[in-house]
Amino acid sequence: MAISPAALACIVLAHEDPRHVRRLVEALDPFPVFLHCDARTSESVFRAMTDGLPERVRVLPRIRTGWAKWENVAAEVEGYRAALAETDASHVAVLTGSDYPLANAAEIQDLLEAHPEESFIDARPLPHPAWGRDGGAARIRFPHWAWRKHMLRVPVPRRVPRDVVFAGGSQLKVLARHHAEAVVEVVDSRPDLVRFWKRVWIADETFVPSVLRSPALVPDFADEHVPHALWWIGWDGTAQKSPPWLGTADAGRLLERRTEPGVAPQHVFARKFSTAVSSDLLDVIDAAFDLHTEAAREVVAP
Image 1 (cartoon, rainbow, N blue to C red):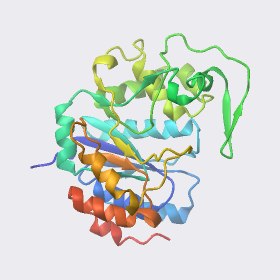
Image 2 (cartoon, one colour; image 1 turned 120 degrees about the horizontal axis):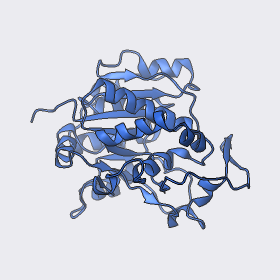
Image 3 (cartoon, one colour; image 1 turned 180 degrees about the vertical axis):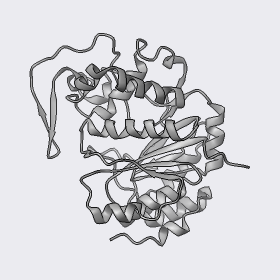
């Protein structure tokens, strides 16, 4: 089956582990990749991540991102902007540098062709029961700062925008082209919302979901999305701020979940992986889903 490089454009937000990032980039072949490397990352790691990449990869201008900061949204939006300007992709995916595909390009293209105008995003209106006692409302209502992976909250309620339906979901998503365009348009035309979200807690989990779920901003989103995440994440039931790293011990449940009958659509990505913990598991994934990453394995990180 012929693969159109424009079926999907991939934004990859990375800050470490250049060997895995390059393996991820190769596994996404032939889709165009827009790679953002955190400006805080050392020059040696940045060079190991980006030197000699194929022509289908564009390295985005570097922004100083960080845990729970608005700048993560800013980097994502710059990825949308570049993907829309430089490709005619029908969809744009947002991945981190610790993700990996669970499907080859032909299967991913088939899925997107079956949903040509639809986004894949599980955007839940707030309050969302999984987000604590207040369902995440405090994230929006009070101004926040992130400092050394600690939350600083000013306990003074602030006025919230009236034309926004607040929602939350994962940073990981696949947006239809017209929804990516809508997000960029809101960023460019509504500086008031950008100012407001700069003090929202973990803005990358609420900004895009809220924009898309607000009829005043994106009128037809309710009928133009699949409320299903395309990522398998190896949560193991323990209380953790971040998903656990995946290794060979997770191969059984990952492959079982990926191929379980009755799950539609199937997961086509997973997280999270690292060179140190996950290399053997990634070999299993490559073999199971016909991914080809031999060249990436020869890249040596500093």
